[in-house]
Length: 146
Image (cartoon, rainbow, N blue to C red; front, side, top):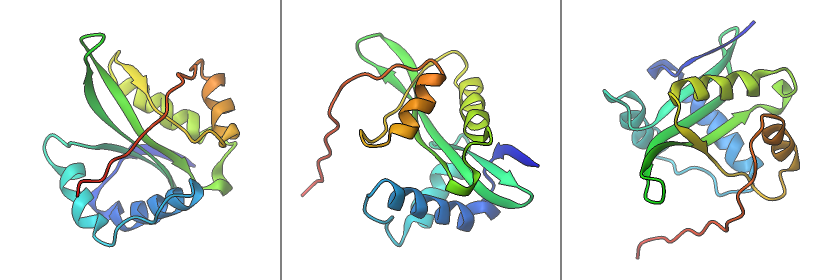
């Protein structure tokens, strides 16, 4: 049985492993070596700056979703930014992604939810479109401070 629940401090090592797998899956740079020290204060503050739910399969974390609440200039409203949604590939196709996204929808308390996925990730695009989500075409840029 798999449960979707809030992340706990004792989950941090397993969450970091999932994050590293997620970065590799998305063909991104690996997480920095001090990620635990960066994430822990954001995840476990009161209130947390970064919210996280995990998919727990009999004591083994097999997925996670993270999000923040932000404010949109154009609408003058809060929205929920789904930063990450990831499931170990051995646990996909079992409804866990839907359980995670449904839990985020509930936590968003009526806010619009926005997220992104790589253009090559057609499996994710099909999943999101089955939920009723529609793509918004934009190009994401990143800028590192000097």
